[in-house]
Length: 132
Image (cartoon, rainbow, N blue to C red; front, side, top):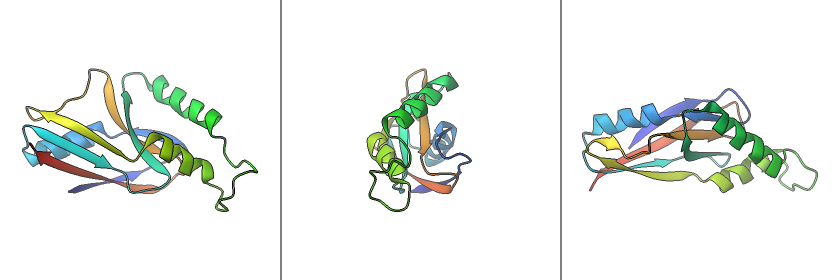
C-alpha cells in the first residue's frame, strides 16, 4: 500500500490526484488489475469526474454547499463541521479504478479528485494496487 500526503488550502476544495495515482500504478509494475483509493478521513472524500474544465468541480462544490449548508442551527454535532461529515458521506471515501495494460482505465475527460470539506488540512490517501 502507498500513502499519498495531501495538503489542502481551502475549506471546500477538490484536488486532482490522478497523476499521483498513475505514478503509484507505474511503480507497481501491474499491467492488469485495480487501484483502490481510500480516504481515511470523516470530512474528506474521493470522486471521479471531469478534469478538463475546472468549472465542473467548482459547480459540484457550489451545489454541495447549497444542498448541505454550513453551520446550520439544527446540527447537533458540536464541532461545527457537521456539513463536512455529510458531504463526505454523500461523495464517499473509496473508489476502485481498473488498470488495463499498465494504465488507469479512465475515460477521456475523467480525473480522480481528493475532496476536502473541512480544510485547510494535511490529509492522506491510501492507494492499493493489485494484479488480476
